[in-house]
Length: 421
Image 1 (cartoon, one colour):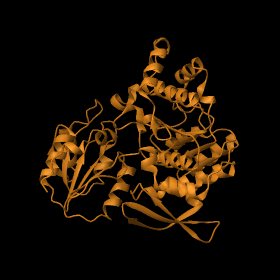
Image 2 (image 1 turned 30 degrees about the vertical axis):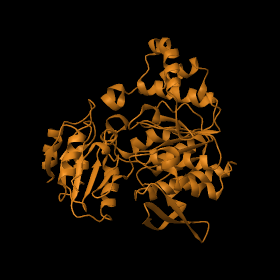
Image 3 (image 1 turned 120 degrees about the horizontal axis):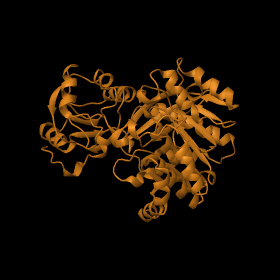
């Protein structure tokens, strides 16, 4: 299981998923789909797209990874988890196939999702890649649209040690004749996507060249964003229930992706776009994206875990009002910890900890690395102890931020913590 042990669980080819799906009657060919890859933001974009499609009246599947609390978060239809009895039934049915093929956890989960979606006769499914794109198990679908959010530094030991190499892996989801949207243009990677689109005969558009962010504000827990379309003089205001400032970048990707679907004949009215964006969390169950867990003190959880993601979180902190900043930090051992630690503010008090997975970087080692960057704090054996200590130290006007690992955020149990204020 990649989320637990890392690269040794990664199968760098499509053979197993092809064998699994062939034995199941090729369920991936029985529903229409949207394929989404990228270094950061692909989870948020996937959920926003699914919410908009649900609001437009389409029966919508959603496959994402990893999960925070419940395995079934990975496979949803109209926001509802795949039922436990289907997970059991599918797994028991596939035991002989599992013994024959020896699939990874992720490969089997992808096949399970495709089977559930096919069985339920979806209108469309939003499929998020797990890692990379070209050799990702999800890459056996032939989608309506291919979306790549952005390219950044992550999984370099698997995808490559240059942005161009990483982009090449992500560009592997671009299919012949299928429109492609790249969320964020970058001089180092643009040509990679242009070349991939040319070779596959696909149309390509960079979302950030089609619309501009005009202005933004927070209101009643929502992020209000004014966007100007290059083809229309007037701006439009969108209200997002995902309040992280970095969602402004994801919004441009979503809007262009919806535009491309509309061009293909999908009926997605303006009202559905507005409704879907305003109710993404409620309709799809997305958590861990600048999510408020408690007030007074303010406790925020965010799954940012690489340098680009953490840079966006730090930018958000600059707009926040608080007396003292407490950061509960845990990371996995195969990430570039130094790039992340170099970004973090030295003025915060740190609570170094780890998630309960083999990949987790030991809390003492993380604390020692943090010291080299002027980060001061103590080490705690798990996030529960770290959060309780932060709650004991924080005043009502303070901010407690939990970040550094998806798995760390997944282990937070805020209701079990006693706050002194």
